[in-house]
Image 1 (tube, helix red, strand yellow):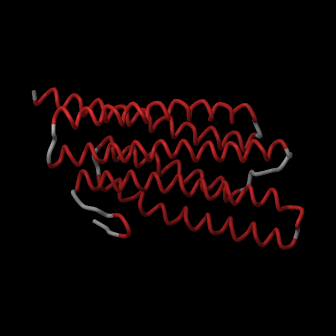
Image 2 (cartoon, rainbow, N blue to C red):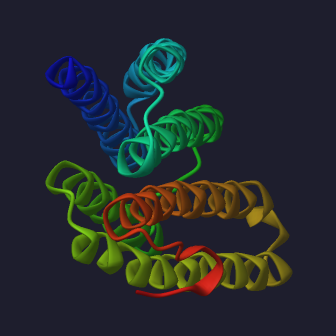
Image 3 (cartoon, rainbow, N blue to C red):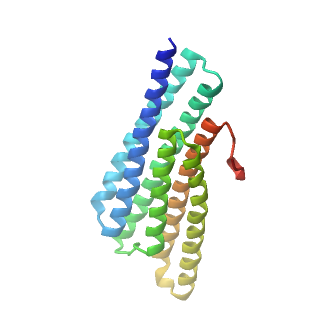
Length: 219
């Protein structure tokens, strides 16, 4: 019976990893679409997000069934609670990618250039955050997760830089309003994507180290 419980829990974990892989893929595609100005890639992001939404509902249902059937306690209970929370963060990552895709699609229709270094850097850092957060989850490694928390500050600083730079440019040149507002919105969505990666890492730390590091706590 104990082995059956373990297999069920590992199956849930495996599905979370698969879902995370698709969220990371959506992030890469939306960046490629912005850089290469490819409208067709935005449509691919929309399709990926639909799949993520389906997995989100399915995994929640299976987690509830696991809790009802097994009544886990201590570490296993923390693990399932974290799985449900991580599932929600991954679904919201898909939402952030869709938001960027809509903004990018509208910008391309207006022939606006959204390919700036700060945005590309934000994407690069957030992609690494997602990779490390999923790695920490797979390896059950709270030390890897801790690195993600530190990277989040860099993304926050870049978002502020984009926002301040774009506002400054708009004051000098009103013709840039549509472009710069689009860039501000994209930066905000990328920053939120990074926040979700941070949330995942915090849940890994909670599950593996038994410590709550939200709101500024550290191991």
